[in-house]
Length: 236
Image (cartoon, rainbow, N blue to C red; front, side):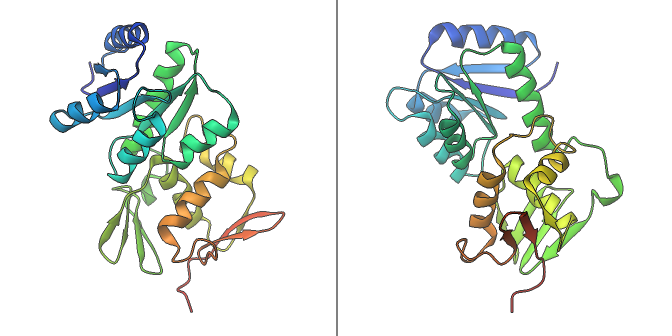
């Protein structure tokens, strides 16, 4: 029995009941609500280690709610949606979701995604133990691999699990051009199922957090036709 608390936000009562029963049988503590207002009330009084969020909700939709959760730097998010098009998946990633699963889905697949997201958030990968306590510094930033935290001159900068994994790869491979295929291969060392089309999305989100001008990046540079180059040196 683990002590992880999940919150399911979905307006389908049948699906809420199914997920509550199934995930509870897997050892999770599960609460369910039908919309964003109920989610806000629940989170004001209870802790959730992960939010499973439907995209199509009455009132505020799932993307709006995901943005709010991410702005608080809070729980990891898995988005569920009957709309499985790539554009919806990419938008979900852009607003900060940690994973995206199209309906209908097998509950066992959702369970695998939940475990993978929580493992990434907790830093459950035991590889590279010697470097796990290192702090990488570039410009005014410090990336602590042990606490999985990024700070700028002492001020914390929230990162999603996916953003942390990508930044870790960049700081461990400085001044080297990494193609999208290289990045996908390297991400598999930290994530069970890295998104196949999310590299550019993650880079864009990461630039917003570490670049003074994301349109003219200094640290994560694009090498057209080849990939991305991380340059850790101080800005001139």
